[in-house]
Amino acid sequence: MAGVYQSTVSDVTLEGNTEVVVEERHEIPTASEVENAKCECCGMCEECSQEYIGRVRDMFSGNMICGLCAEAVHVEMEKNGGKREKALEEHMSDCVKFNWLGRSYPALYRAEDVKEILKKSLRCRAMSTTSKDSKDI
Image (cartoon, rainbow, N blue to C red):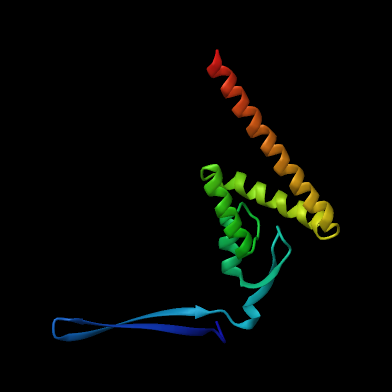
């Protein structure tokens, strides 16, 4: 490849009385090999190499997602027991909802969040009431 730059990482170690130099060479993509990739969740664009885009797509079921969304998916995976597909689906759903409602109507988006909080609170109360009733029997 013409115009490929290389970075070299050197490590000098001593083995016995001799010095051993280990060098690793990494190819750095040129500007022509880097492209703007758009996150399929949030819509943010970032410059990525084709190799990186391929790794991300392999990891996330063919979807190109940015680093922030990837981290959010990993957090969601921790919540759901490690199911990547379900975590990705949940995060993409949240992003679609935010992009559709949150950017255009921020007050409605906050109201929707409050509604979800109230639903969860009511479910927790109902579960605790049900468990108290079953203990009384």
